[in-house]
Image (cartoon, rainbow, N blue to C red):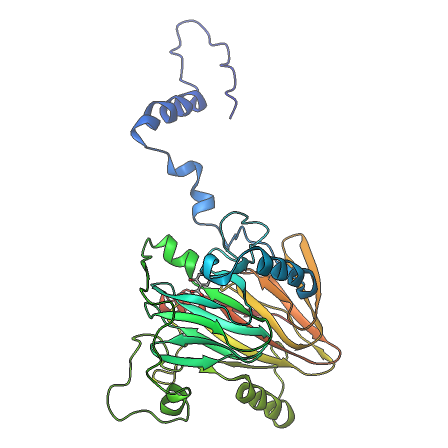
Length: 363
Ligand code: GTQ
């Protein structure tokens, strides 16, 4: 800020200190004590509405895939520990973040490879994008991956990934890494074993918790996280198609369902909510905005999303395996001529736990 020169004052009248100079001097003098005035930043600290630095962005799979395959030649899954290309928000480069609170990446595992066992306090979701037959192991149980499956790695559980199939497998990693970093609550350990020992048959967790039934005793084995590791696409797809056929279509969301932790009815992970939605052919959705920024993975079909914020409007056309992010309080609407299916995740459970979640459905 430039100080205005003092006005000439008649003799005999005490000179008032120009306020700006007084303030600038105050700021300089107290700065060594790590003191700074609130009134210079108050408007930015408590903005009239969310003012996210994130930008809406789209990653086309046909542009990303060649780099994933090059990564497959550049480093093994074992050496990389996790061979992932991070989807960085273009307005948050260098922060490994897709929104202020969420991380997104595309992980590649080639036939015969293993991504070694480790655990961390960050929660992870896997959404299978390409290829089938790789597995992820959690707490002694392996889950085979198929496109469209939603798989969970609960906080602080040992997990390793492997590919016993004959094709490359790619999935979207959604983690709460930036949130845990913000809280300075991240812990991690490497396992002494490369792959954990299988102690339970595949499908045990789904059989126990995935049929609207639960064990009579001991039913929160992963604390706040769902005891189901894998939510197969087959089932979500069938539900969406039946609802498209037989139930009213929501003017904003088409047919949209949220995944649940069957033990609580809440989100599958304490920090992340996940959704699957179908936009029927000819859908021309109304606009909405919400405080939870969300990451989308296109499962099937084509469509377009219009994202508007202030003076900025972005229109993204998308197809299968593309990914995009709609930041907090950006107004978005969907269209699809031929129909499509979208998976998404956001930090909504945290907004809800704090009682600050807001959504507006516009017309
Ligand atoms: O698979 O454990 O994309 O720890 C980032 C951090 C994946 C994983 C990521 C991780 C993982």
